[in-house]
Length: 251
Image (cartoon, rainbow, N blue to C red; front, side, top):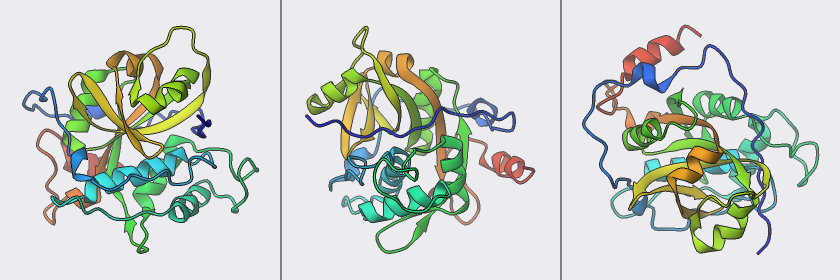
């Protein structure tokens, strides 16, 4: 198979980053299997990530599809041109060809701030924003499961091994000892099923073992869509959204 593009810069850290553990409130146990990803019945779309290192905006567009899908599987449409427009804009560069100085990947915190303040554009020109985002403890799969259950989509940075590209056609990612790291890659976790975490990347949903995530995860963020918050600021049960918004206002 051909080699898909990666494109996640090494994550940066800031003491002002809000932590998921700070805003988590007591909640019922996370089910063994969960996720509304089956509502997205159309193709997720490659979104130019076979040509450009635009894995970050592509992943965020997949999260938007997940969040906007209704019971009939109808979700917003995002075209490759939309993803590329966001890719260049969030990185503050002029559009350029694949592999150029304009195609150097994305720092996840830069991309998340763009998603919160500007929004990810869909095919109709509408912007979809985050109400907020919170950092997960790297490798903490309990936090990952809780955040995915609460928010519906969690962004994950991976130090992706060569084996992941080799295994992609099988629809399963598992650890292959000794496989070299090819670079950073951004994916979106949308649920869990039969012991696997369900992630979306390169236009497909992949079953990923817990060991793969704990081995290769280098950052993770719970992402709260503004579209799941009602007019009264109600948030998913088990998360202190009002406190998060107040803290974000202090930045």
